[in-house]
Image (cartoon, rainbow, N blue to C red):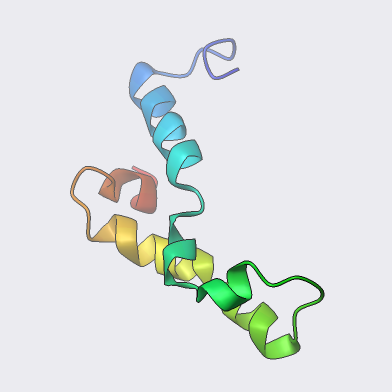
Length: 72
């Protein structure tokens, strides 16, 4: 789709990386919450919502990924 709308190659690569690593922050979520059967408690749900913040910090500290964290 990115090619169809004629995005520059660098942006296409960034989108590919973003798609691959969009849930990387889940590594910081305890497995008992991540794989819980049944509904999550409000505290567990809050923990799940933190995965995007955790992921952002991970990619900011990874030189090859920092540009997808900043959008540049």
